[in-house]
Length: 485
Ligand SMILES: [Zn+2]
Image 1 (cartoon, rainbow, N blue to C red):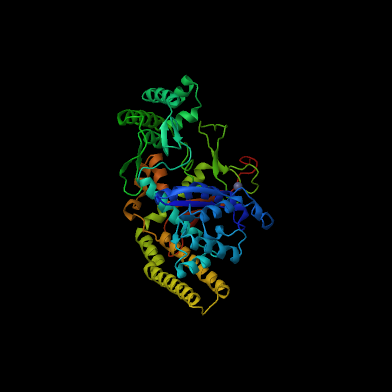
Image 2 (cartoon, rainbow, N blue to C red):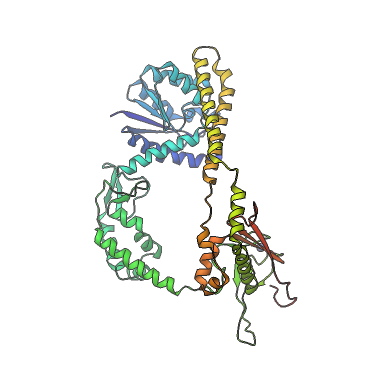
């Protein structure tokens, strides 16, 4: 088994992100090493200050060097090659790589492994050492792949083991803790017939821990099972199960019945409450229902929509029927001209050809990679010095990062036309719908509603006219002295 020295160190850039990045290194590098079949040994200088004056504090780096000299190490694994250098100087970096070369040690990041004995790879390492930040995203992707691989093999993810398990370092997997197993078995037994609240009261446990204990992922964990997020297959994990499938199914079924029961009771008094659709046009906060205690002479009572922020000066309380009706009428009018809507959609999306745009970007990425390769060759052949090549290399990497980003944006933007069939609706259909159906219908029609003092702006999910997604409805003027907050 190859021994991989994991070297952890702060970087001098991005001081604010360092806490997060150190965690990333401490959690993910060992996991990555294990997923590659390497035996990880940690050298952690993450606690040392990264400032230039404190180089002497990098004690682990010194220990690593002496272990390399003693031929105890096969691979040095770092988050980015730049972490290897003590002071970010090319001299120190080159010296360390030279040491690795002499002792047949390879250098690895989660995205690549290089052998310093190969001249080209040695040069590449020198260059990539200065490009770490820009290639961060790529590294993360590779690390995620390494974790995914370990997950597929049913290995523990790292982090905290949920009860009744604890992590056994020697066996490198979760093991059952008999004391907490007893409690868990009582929780599971009760959960077949009782609510989480009652269990927490009976057993004197915090409500939230009982709820967590009964969550789907926990029940799976206790059966030593896991769902492969890609294939949907069930993976058997490498620890011992303590819950059987039948009991797990009974617990889930009991929870389902209780939750349906609760949902049946839930009613909404107004069309738009709780849809996360309606916002204050002035401050952007959610609009909420303000209940009116005053009952009119005919026995009805009108509630109001208003900004949840009572200090929001420009907003006012608006009677709910005015907004509910205004919106319903606007939607019905828009949908009554279905042919126009379909034409507007086609006109808006005509000429869009993400395929061609993507091809252009791919060509750009390929060109940048060719350029990068040529530059490395030029350095290898002594045509360009390393120092001269660095600015160009930075430029190429920046271009690559930008193109990749644009590519992601285009891919995620690709929109599908709405389901016109389900949007075909008449005023009669609308009258026959109950409040819940109306609320569902609103969701597929509108993206957002902004409420102003005299009008509301509706943001449709599809264009009403070519390129135009919004509609404005007027609201009744305020009745002075009566409806103000
Ligand atoms: Zn507001």
